[in-house]
Length: 563
Ligand code: TPU
Ligand code: MG
Image (cartoon, rainbow, N blue to C red):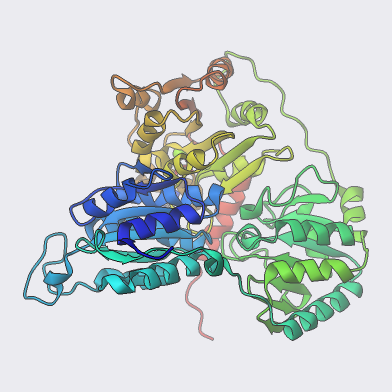
């Protein structure tokens, strides 16, 4: 292990050791030598994006499938564009190692103005901004510090499940530092304080034990903090009803006999909110309650009834136990919790069966219902369904997932455009899966170029582009001329990206027959993506979107209250 290597090669080894097979990159003169160094490592492939925003979202999507990811951009002009996806990764609890190649250190202390900067002598503003949207931000200024700083950042990302920032000056990537040792201590996860853990488990078991009708609620942080399997153990010990929050769809199997649906207040799945709202104890594992997930603050759970399990602390009916980690807490509680299936029995007694939509005539104009009916058929146990901001969220929520199917949504950050590059990144990290994206026309226009990278790498992604001629979600929240968008030839755009060497397919479906034919083609196409433009009426949206939009709009328009 002794000896030296370049800083770039040190970084590449660490990225390989933490399980990356790819990193995403865009070149610029401040990072070219770093990219060369990274290319020398043949075990990780350098993958390119069309711009830095997409690059950050591609890494975000890769982290969803792989647990961690990396992207490399050039200083300032590139970094600032990527910040949006990095902040999104922070919001969504995804460890993205974000690397920026920066100016030569000899220029920093001299009276030298540099390109790609604001034209001042401040070279710290990127690092300062990065601190706001990462859990660790480091700038290498001396080669001897590089191993320490790189390891410090990478271990923080793995521990905290948040992005980190590493700045490497262009005269440092080839400079020598000591070779990397084994990873062991970088992967060490913090342990709960034993006394605090025991107290939290005791209080929660007691609280649950006295409950008449407890329920479990899976939250979006459950996966990032490693609690999906202990959550299931706990659920099976208690035998109660189990609901999921929107961003936790697929974190508990929908075919499980204890599954009672998605909790989203009045727009959640049929019969679910009644059971959750009438429960006297709700154990929420890794939740994040915001204005969206509470449907404009109309579905706020009473803190007095909650066992609120955060990544590193637990609150039992308002009493906090610090230094208690989610996975350990759920595992320990599963050992002592008592059986109480009352909420599940109540759900089974009250539940109404959803009526399956009938098959539309193949030549009648395509509707949202018929589109979803056909997309449902595409989802098998090996599918990951990604849904973009807009009515695709609600169409996705209504999909039934067979065991093994996964669901990805970016509902905390909620950036239109996230889904196309994130799907690209996800597909790269999950080569064996059937990757399906549902995206609206407005969202697609933000980051459409990244379809070309799916073509370039021959990824057989299926994109259902819902062309409802505008920003329908915004129409339902608050309409105005700004919700109209320029029509594109979405199916035709694939050919633009194909140029003379690509094998992407683009189809337009205006009725059920065309959609069925396009899906058959898509399922048989493995040499690249298939984009299916589904044209529906502008106002053909879910009733959940209508109601949710109205309630979110009401929350947004509350006037300032004096307290
Ligand atoms: O199904 P639909 O028509 O609602 O989806 P589409 O066509 O993708 O429209 C989405 C419209 C939308 C906007 C404009 N959803 N949220 N926004 C606000 C918004 C603006 N800018 C960013 C970066 N993210 C946003 N969520
Ligand atoms: Mg739209």
